[in-house]
Amino acid sequence: MSETPFESCTYEVRQDLIDAQLEAWERIAAPGTWLDSAHRIAVVAEIRQARSCDLCSEIKEALSPNAVTGAHTTTGALSGAEVELIHRSVSDPGRLSRAWSQDVLAGGLSEGAYVEIVGIIASVMIMDTATMALGAEETPLPNPVPGEPTRYLPPGAKVQAAWLPIVEPEDVVETDEPLYPSSKVGYIYRGLSMVPESMRNYWAMANTHYLPGEYIYQFDTTIRAISRPQMELMAARVSGLHQCVY
Image (cartoon, rainbow, N blue to C red; front, side, top):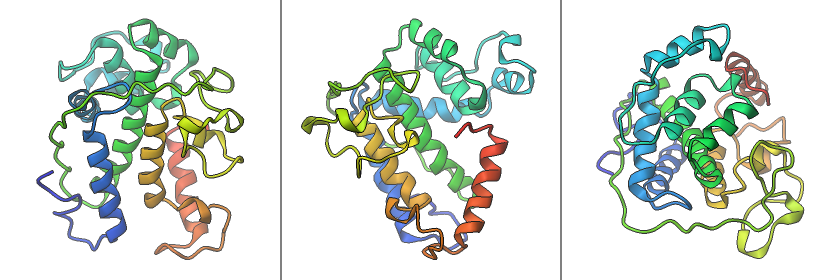
């Protein structure tokens, strides 16, 4: 990458945030589990394209997302199923459904690629939102890295408590690890577990932007510039505005 995240920011930014984003962009640029490097970078470009998509704006404003028809404004680099997954996840995630997810898969997208793309969306949305909130310029797309996807599928992945397969703590095998920090993890932590590398990459970045796992249940923690109650009040408000089920 030719530019460091937050390089144009006029505020002082914690070094661990800068480092976390640098590392996250390097991981995004590397070949993944089901997608190669160029494909993963194309996903990032489409995530950013979705923010200015007219159809997505119409869907967001409609009483029902199914009441609007049309075509997404895209970069033209990805399949229709990938575009639909990215645009709806970026613009109107609170109204996605199991039936919608099955339609996306029926459009030719594999379950593994679906989960990997969702992991990239989650990571990029956090990083770009943090950058924009601080008034900094958007971090440029990384350059592609040679290599092939690993195509690793956890043997214990199954559809149980989610729309797509996940790996329950009791089903983790040696080749999945490291997967979970303990045997007691919430479902929000398990969501990307069908693609272990995506799950590890996401949480390595997200924990720095929020709180490291060891502090989650320490409600009097003071490791951030604002108090934990202030953090949770802001998080709850943002989650409500985004119709976050969790």
